[in-house]
Image (cartoon, rainbow, N blue to C red; front, top):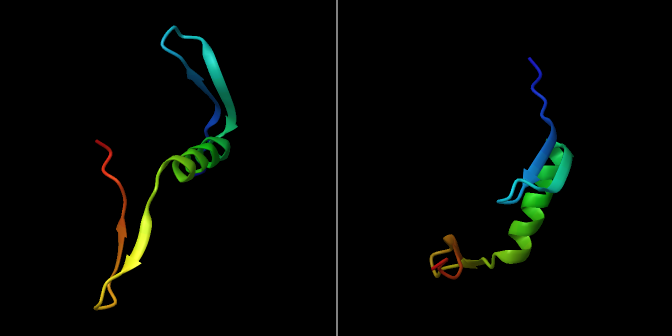
Length: 59
C-alpha cells in the first residue's frame, strides 16, 4: 500500500494560513533545515574512543 500526504497547511493561533507544503517531503526538508540551523550539537570522542554528542540544555 502506498501512503501519501499532500497539501499540508500550517496555521497560526487565529487560524490564518502561514505556510503551505504541497508534499510531505517539503515539510520534512523544512523541519530538518530549521533543526540544523537552530540546534547546536557537537560530536566528540572520549579517551576510550566512544562517540557522544553534547549540546546546550533546552532550559
